[in-house]
Length: 163
Image (cartoon, rainbow, N blue to C red; front, side):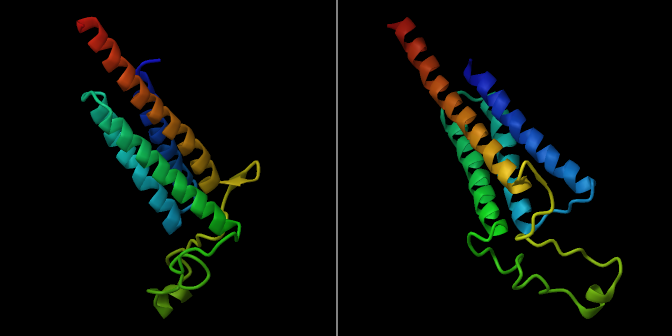
């Protein structure tokens, strides 16, 4: 395994997860607020991955690992909200979901669809999309960490050839 291969795999994983989220959305599963929050770190990881293929060092893979850890953390938090392990934000759970909607919005047949963060809209093998995102993102974080380790290994090999 090389640093760049690990970066390609981790970046590709974020591309796949983000693409999958958009495919589910096109299939009629609109995202809740926390689902959208989970997408942003993947976008960051993709940009970081493209840069890290051009710029050597450990900083960009570290940022990629932090992005993967962030989306995994949000996914774990979201899973807890879905499973009633803890309270979620009132803006997308039972408390405040109707804030900002007018009476006309509430009566409209084709009005805005309110997606609650504490409701599972799709699951596979007993795990929701948020749970799957968390698990896969933890794997991506490991890939980024491997890229960091391999960055150090290639630097050490390079310095041993000089001396």
